[in-house]
Length: 300
Image (tube, rainbow, N blue to C red; front, side, top):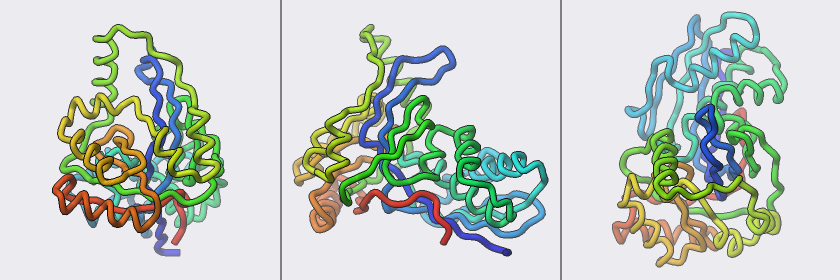
């Protein structure tokens, strides 16, 4: 096999609860992930070394050196297999860069699946999940897809059944936000308030809404502990969230560390109308309808 293509989805966090800052610099999380139908494609081709190139939207914002998470994933997979392998990785971007939708993690997951196939390793899914957990907190979910609760740093996953399809609109912002800077701002704000930070817990009402497919209930329980910090760093996101609510969104939330804003719609038609309203009124320069849950990294 000389070429392998893998499609891998973006995610939205329908609950992101952030615990106190730990001594190791991380936070314990309750992170309810939901994979949505905005995809990157990762192509792996035979080569003597591991390289990466990027096409599509935001391609000029993606590093192509060894800091690229897809290269790190391929190197980690080769190390796990105990051999030296090569692959030309070609990433076609549709997931926003630094947008709070796990685009880099998705590409890493895509590289793991693609190289496992290209190199004929035949490693089981559990092995790929173990490698993914060492690469970053969101990479295991990008492999898994669907809907899941992440605990620990977010990498310990429990799958959640959902009772149907949920329809979303994602307002894509100009420029990204550094995840590290948003967490740092969250810690700064908490320290300034001198308030006790509770241990994160899953929202049972939100989990029930996912299980029954109740979009109205899910919309009322969306939550993100990083949202205040993201809005502090990017105040212009607040009017976008307000506009989505005014145009009938069942719920409006910053996705992960932002700056992408996510709006839950009633159905596919409402999602299309909401996306059009956001762009024609200037509340968002780009608004993309999508649905979830969808599968994780999948061979095409």
